[in-house]
Image (tube, rainbow, N blue to C red):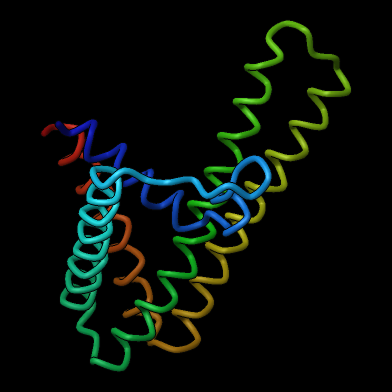
Length: 165
């Protein structure tokens, strides 16, 4: 059950990045989702929104944020999460491409894949730096630190809970 929730959460996150062009296959035929899949996506959307709400509440409480600061942090977290998830998905895609090629991969291809992974990792690192800079510039340094620490703790604790269900 815990794996299903985690898979559904990842599916929801990945679907949020899907472009309309990816929703149409072969000569623009619509990909029809069954009602059970639509219901699962709807349920996972609610779970994702609940997760975001619980996370911002925990962060706001730990850092002592005002309503305005809470809104700012929520906005910055959404931007940071978007980059984290998209870079993670991109890196996963690169590793999947390498796996599909099996042992038939050249040194040049490895170098190209390495550069892709490096670029995606750098993108995630820059997002982290932007996130921290935004917090420091718009909150007190103490609150910025508390926000970041609680963000890390909340994510780690949530991951543990998902693994132990």
